[in-house]
Length: 142
Image (cartoon, rainbow, N blue to C red; front, side):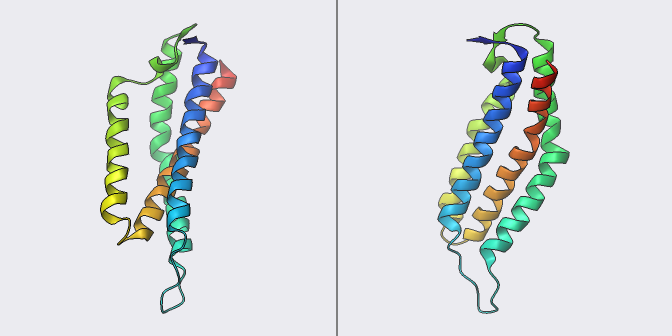
């Protein structure tokens, strides 16, 4: 299926938003039941807050470079092109590896370290949401 540059940028942004929201939901609901410890600290809220702050910063300062590279690939293919052409093959290979790492993290540490899972998933979700913004700006520009 061929798409315009604007459509490819919008699809890329929506994909990053969808994955970011999915990670926030998958990290939040199973692990939000973390209770307060003896000192009264609510570890769930602390993990979410740290994950979102660090993740948003990572999205703005690190992942935005990746989104700019994808936008550059979209710009380099003017007119109609397949929507999957916006991602380099390395990223296509890296995505299943990252999914596998997330599943392994949940499997091996989910029960014993739920705050870690909550923080990591919230952080990565926030990073993807923050770094999706350049896609929508580029879609308006095309």
